[in-house]
Length: 172
Image (cartoon, rainbow, N blue to C red; front, side, top):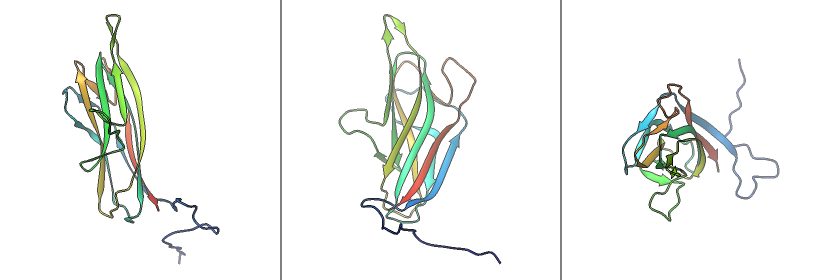
């Protein structure tokens, strides 16, 4: 017969540091292997497949969301990315019109239109205060005459790159 040790929490001998947590409870990850292309201006759209659902074990837990993806555009264009818990925007600035966690902006410089290929990485710590299934997703907004691609370079490059979104439940 195999032995099992089950505990709700392990606390260091000196206690948990002030404001500190007890550690990682669970990790859930989505790996997106296909390409997302957005050709719609002035509308927030979900980046298809770049979402993750986690069911926290404790309503006091925090959820650390980590996103990692490559993005590219053709020519002069403004692109903004934001994170949502369900339909609520999280981790975004509040002082402007197009608020998000990352902005890509390429302009025509000296009459030459530029292209941009970037790596987007963000981590946002959320406090959902629930034990119900919770979905986090990334949205994209653009304004310009070019498409945005997530998961491949512009210029009809057929090479695809994986994108990830990871949810870590961190105990309080």
